[in-house]
Length: 248
Image (cartoon, rainbow, N blue to C red; front, side, top):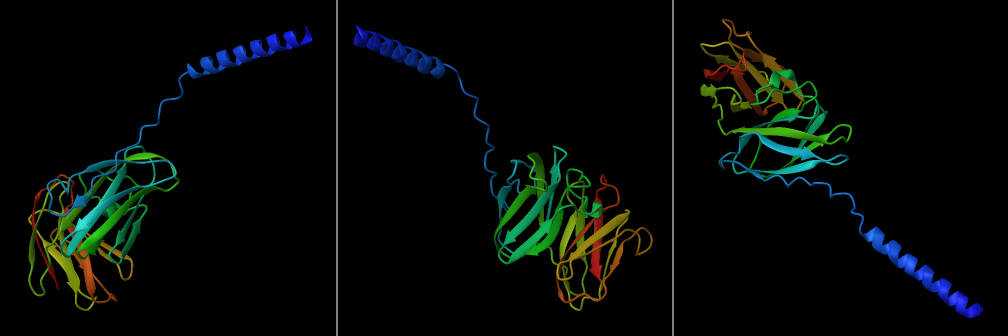
């Protein structure tokens, strides 16, 4: 009798276990977390390469975007958090290692307006493959917009360069410095500004009316011979026009 009772108890327990497992299997789990698609590479010269790109930085991580350059190029990159977070930029590849956290307000030349905690940078790149890493300073998640502006215009020694500018499309040029003590000036019918970054000294320059008559002029001093990026645009974000850039 005792063994029969034990068999019945074991059978009941087994049936209860099976029912519990079956019931558990019917409860749906949480939906999978959507994963952003990997950003497409940005290839110099391809259609849409200089348009605004959108992406997402996951929490505790970063997003990498491949950048392909096929000739010596001035590159200006900016990113804006559309989630009110603090983005960072890191550009590496072909001997380049440049970072930005909070960009200067003077480089607000993109199709979107930079916030006070948004990053931007400008540098000269030689042909090669590069990686743009977009991160968030406190490891928070954030959607973002990013724009890569490029120019192969080189300011020849002794001669001016004609540049066009419009909203989200500044005039950009590679300016070779022979001594590092030059002045860079622009003339235009409109009120224009100049921005320049000297990588060897990590110095940023900007001017509005230093050349007189609403024309900008940047005076360098104590820099070394090198190539730098110079960005020229209208004083107002909405301006479009032309200017002549020269080294004095």
